[in-house]
Image 1 (spheres, rainbow, N blue to C red):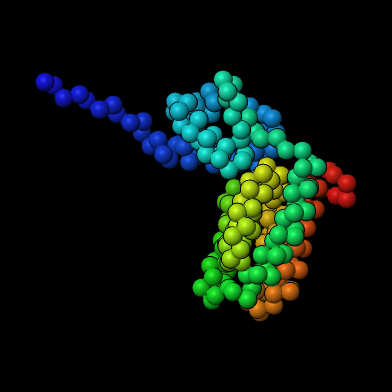
Image 2: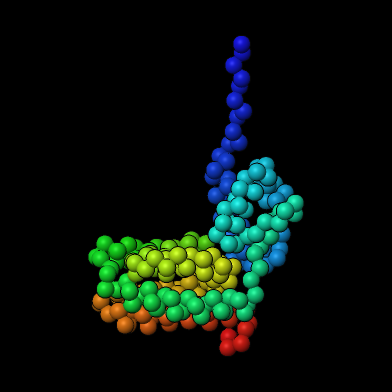
Amino acid sequence: MTARTKPTPEPRIESSVLAIKSELERMIAANEMSAGDRVNESYIANLYSVSRGPVREACRLLERVGLLKSVMNKGFYVRSLSAKEALDIYDLRITLFGLAGRLATPRVTDLQIRQLVQGYEDMEVAAAGGDVVQFYNLNTEFHQQIVEMADNYRLAEIWPTLENELQLFRRRGLATVETMKASNREHRAILDAMEAGNAALAARVMEQHITEGKMRLLRSIGGPGA
């Protein structure tokens, strides 16, 4: 009996998926794809000289983090969230991030501070290079680390949901070198307060950081108060 030959896997499938995911993130951040736009799977597949399989896998990854949504028999679309919904979520994040700072500061260890400092330094590099996708991912991780340091399970459960819902708007609020650098200056203030062990100050600067993010969003969409 002749052994069956296994099908040859598509070359560099994993790297193709990650490259396509990164490109779609960039297009959304740069407003080349707007809320409600359909992902042109054929175009992306041709662009990367792959089948539509890796494109769909990249889309599924972005659906999990809230950037895309799938519609049965129609494909993937950029997720839509109204400006009012986004601003309401920002108001929640202001309060919750301040709470995270108040809880985390007395608990933070030297190792955790060093990890946050490394994140801040990596964001400096990303901002200088105009790498919006990298900056956004590092920024999200920086916030998540502080939330986890707060050691409040309900806060840790709620926070990622709010972050995912806001992905589209938050990326656009960080779409220029200037806005990324401004955001990272605020991260430095957060680090200074935490290193000093000043929980009240950490809470205030974290609330201010999210408030400034809200203002950056308003400026990016031309909203009131921009």
